[in-house]
Length: 73
Image (cartoon, rainbow, N blue to C red; front, side, top):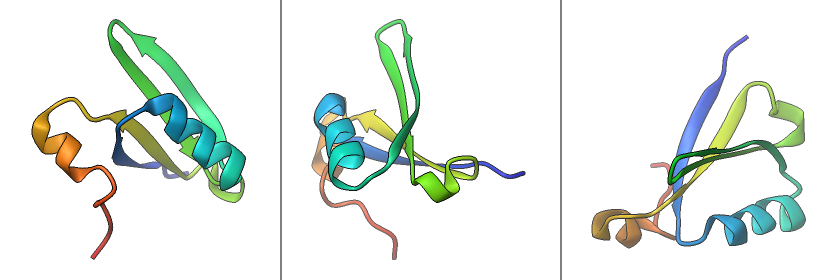
């Protein structure tokens, strides 16, 4: 078994969660509050045990500048 986690910076974790679950059909695989940090993972149903996306709250100006502009390649 192999787990791969990708981080995606978002401006609002709840909004991003609704989009990925309600619109794209992903499933929430983890939602943990660690102090003021929220660890939020979603996965495609067919790969829930292998690949996950961490919907990370963009906190710094550099991170906020990446929202909506992240992609491979």
